[in-house]
Length: 331
Image (cartoon, rainbow, N blue to C red; front, top):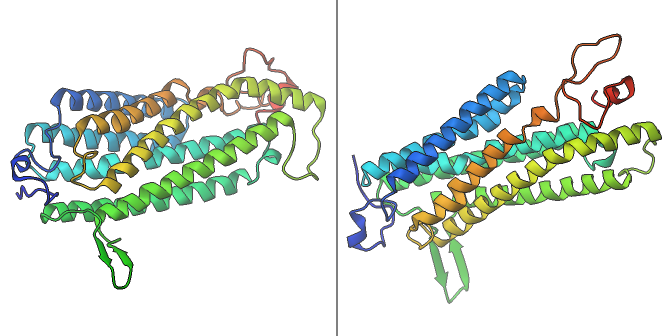
C-alpha cells in the first residue's frame, strides 16, 4: 500500500508521520468513536420508539459516517503512514453533517405546519423540497470532491488549489477540478444554505409572534385558536432552541472546514490536530446529542387514533389541557 504524503511541499522530516502532518491521538479518537457510537444507537432507538423513520436516513446516517470517520482516525493513530484510513476519515467527517442538516430542514418544516403555514414565505412541502434538494446537491459535490481528493492523495498528489498568475494578461486561474477545491465549493454552498435557512426560519418566527401573515389575504384565525397556537409555541420554543444550538454548531464546523480547505492541505489549519477535534468533532457531538435531549418526538408527536371523534396528541404541554379545542391544533 502506498504511503505517499498528500502535501508534496511538506518538509521531508514531517513525511514520516503520514498524510495528516501529525499522528492522531489515540484516546481522543476512541472517545469520539464511543460518543458517536452511543449517540447513533440512541437515535436508532428514538426513531423506532417514536416512529420517526425519517430520522434514519438523516441523523442516523450522519452518526454512522462520524463513527466511520473517527474509527479511521483511530486506525491512523496506530498506523499513521497508511493512506487508506486517511481517505476514509476524509470522506466520513466531511459528509456527516450534510444528512444531519437535512433533518434540521425537515424539523422546521414540521414546526411551520404546526404553528401556521400562513407565516412562512414558502409552503412547508416546498420549503422541505428546496432545502433538502440543495442539501443533496452539497452532499454530491462534497462526495465527488472527497473521492477526487482521496484518489489524488493515493497517487501522491496534493489536492490543493493550483494558482497560475500571468502578469501579461492579468489572469488568475484556479484548478477547480482538484479534489480539495471541489470539497471547498460543497462546504461553501452548504454555508449559504444554512444562512438562507436561518433567514427563513427567523422571518417565520417573527411573523408568527407578531401575527403578521406573509399574504395579507390569509384567513384570520379566531382568538381561541390563536391562543391555542401561542400555548403550543410555549412548548415548541424549546425545540427551536435545540435547532438554534444545532445550526450554530454546524455553522462553526462549516466555517472551520472552509478556512481549513482554503488554506491548503499543507497549511497550518489542516496540520493542527486540535482544530479538527474542537471545531469538527466536538461541534458535531454537541449537535447530535442536542437532538437526543431535545428530540422532535417530544414536541411533534403525531396524534393518537380518534377517541370520541377527537384525535388526541401523544404528548400534551403542561400548560395545555387536552380538550377538543387544544387537540385540534396538533392535526
